[in-house]
Amino acid sequence: KTKMKAFKCAACQDIVKEIHVAMFEHRRKKAKAVPPDEAEEVLEKLCEKSLGTYGLKFQDGLPTLELTNDSKWMKASGGWVQQRLEALCGDLFNDFSESIQREFEASCKGRYGDTKCELDTLQHRVCEAVTKLCPKSGKKNNSAEL
Image (cartoon, rainbow, N blue to C red; front, side, top):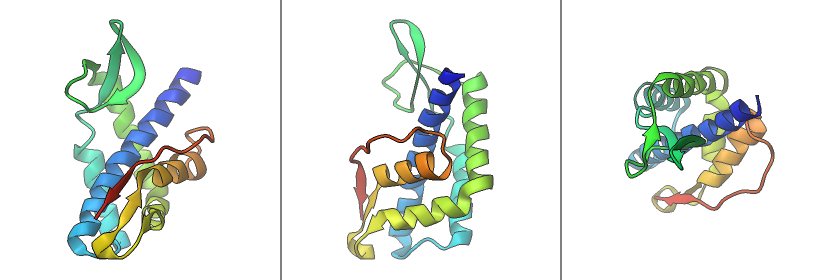
């Protein structure tokens, strides 16, 4: 049970990372906040297409609960890993898409031509505060700039 909780937390953070990248790119192209209908479209496409490269990292010949999409790592993918990721992404989309969109915009500071959108803030708010898939913890410092 504890391992599945850790997996769900790691998966949430990785899914939110992909959401951050997709929403940030959409925001950058439009040079404005992402409207709710467009945010839903971005999230739906993400759940359908962007998670296929993820798998569990191997360490000492065994899979860990750490997810990666880095092609440099040997990873266990497909099967239940892919099914769980897609199911969790679908749950996030169905249950929390409005909150995710709102939290994404709240994580962005500055004008549209010079915007920073804080990944750590988004991961913290979505995975810890909104969905409660992760225990409360300290934040990392990751951001993207427009």
